[in-house]
Length: 214
Image (cartoon, rainbow, N blue to C red; front, side, top):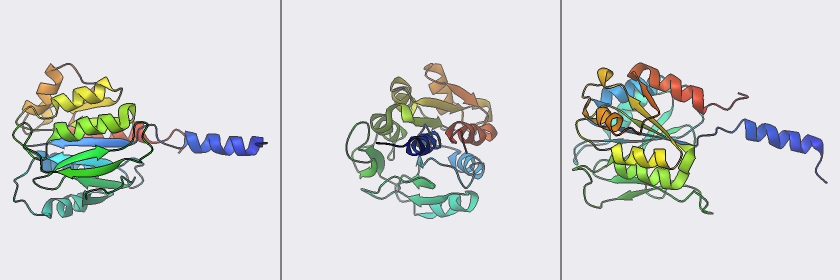
């Protein structure tokens, strides 16, 4: 028979587990500065893993993760194929690869990353839509999508899927974006839960991702 102490302990563990289980971020033109500001604002004990699709040239080297690690309180690395998704880590889509989330959403397989060299989507690889849509399939209402500065419409379709599956859709206020086209497209599609100045996004994420009893 389960003791009341065991049940109380399990209840506290559940209460201390964050409701959201993944944050996915998309950025394009102006994204380096935007990501540096956002990551700088996340605390070192941020409880949810972060996955980023930043548009960049196909021949880009691994300097982006090293540069962003300088600004971040969390460990920043390029995602690897079949890598398990763990808290306390910021994962970047490697240059010239789509980054997808596999498993989860009722599957017995824990979510993990997959890399793909399938054709460009919205003229880009990595594609924000590909990351967002696969994250919505894997995590459903447990994912937060964040769309930042950019010069095309990549991310709008993926953010719509996150919203449709019950997740949270957050967009940078175009007035604070180096290039407002990408966030403005998502806003025009009326799929957004929050429109925030860049400087306020990290504090919003911290507020809604921390367990209530922390």
